[in-house]
Amino acid sequence: MYQNGYEQYKMQSVNTMTRGEMLLLLYDELTKRLTRAQIALEDKNFDLFERSVQRSREIVQYLDKTLNMEYSISYELRRMYEFFLFELSRLQAGRNSAVVDELKPLVAELRDAFKEASKTAAV
Image (cartoon, rainbow, N blue to C red; front, side, top):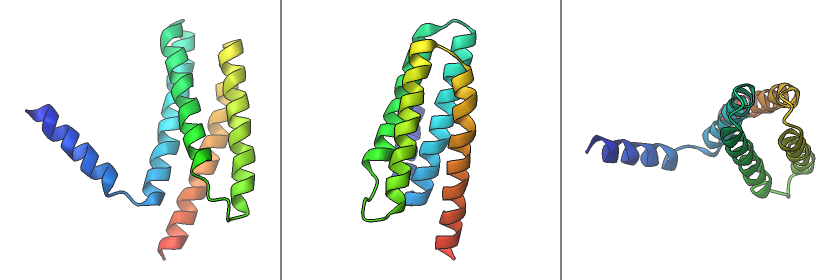
């Protein structure tokens, strides 16, 4: 019974989010999955590592797919997302956690930029 109520709450929360809030949530989830991949790699849990990297790729692909190409900034974001996907492929192939150390600050910086833009747009 509680599980069903929790699921309804989650769905309602997601459905009432603004685009800015949803974008920040996606970046937070990307950071979480990168961290999970790094920990799984250290623990030699390769199944969890693969799932975490794959989910990270799916998030970046979704972010890229939802870009509005009417804005010039979208072209720069597309290039950044392509770089992220390249680095995720490199991470998956080489299983080198240093790649995560390189990606996480870039993701955090982009997230923070969107957070500031969201505040500015709300004013």
